[in-house]
Length: 181
Image (cartoon, rainbow, N blue to C red):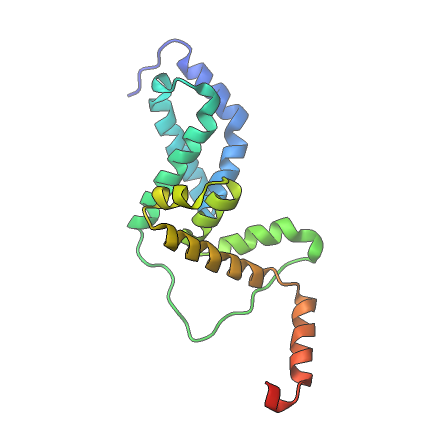
């Protein structure tokens, strides 16, 4: 049982009410699943609550919670068994809506990435971490970070190609003489 002293409980509650939605979005970007994001945020907030009195700079609480989420998420996906298996056929990506739905399409494309790729992209482009910082956080080499982010971005580019553009590319390919294909 946690002993609540002074205004700690009320301060923490106010912080969670004010920053909870933004932190939940960050957790969702890390996990790719709403339920997992809620679990991740709850675990990170629990750790933050336990350390509340030791945290001297309360202006850096978001960074503390995000770091806790990254660390917890890494621990969770290291423990998971391999959930993806190679297949003989590559499915065609399906994008809902048109070019006006780009934020949703980006989120959907991120959801389709494996955990390590998604985490590396989120840390690099959403959290603005450097490659050495990501390498340290994930416990991998800088070269692995570079290749992981590069492969993830290539997948995202492929997923985000506009369907009309794909049709034009395939039509131009079919019009080429057979010896050029």
